[in-house]
Image (cartoon, helix red, strand yellow):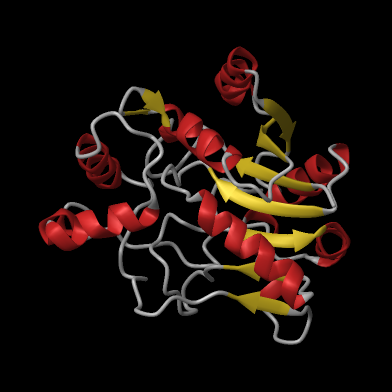
Length: 252
């Protein structure tokens, strides 16, 4: 079975424009995400899924320079972009990763993919966005679906938030698909390791600075750091996480 990880990336972030190419320890966030995802044993291929907007040409150029596979599609109908990318690369299973999660963990990717196949679900994830409960830190988000289920969602989803956020159609109505959500005990869902604001970037730069140039640290090593230095979490404590139904007001 061919499992394709699609890394969602664009430069037009509303809260931190250009974030996916911003520097983190000498590498752009996007490089962190691609390289760490590539380390997952269950992933056959990693593809950067960006937009066909000329403003995102720098992402395509960066991918070409690094030898990363890159697919370009709709700017705001991200579900359409994902479906077409998955079909282009003949995926059997599709993993959604976002480029604002540079600490994405290959072991957690593997666990989520393995649980997806084991449970025979249409969709599996290690988190659902607010208002649902999550127990893994924000920034380790891994979502997996079958190609058949993605095609059904692509055909049937009509709400703007379902098209923009790709996966809500799988879980916003109970019983529509068979879903499997991974939980962690104890609950670390209040920790925020993603980049959506300048404060988030400040935090991740502080974390990377503690690892002396390494890019291969695990999420558990980051967790241990936060347990030793709980004050780190205050750097972005005031940031409000987006919900499943938030949409970009620029979306037509």
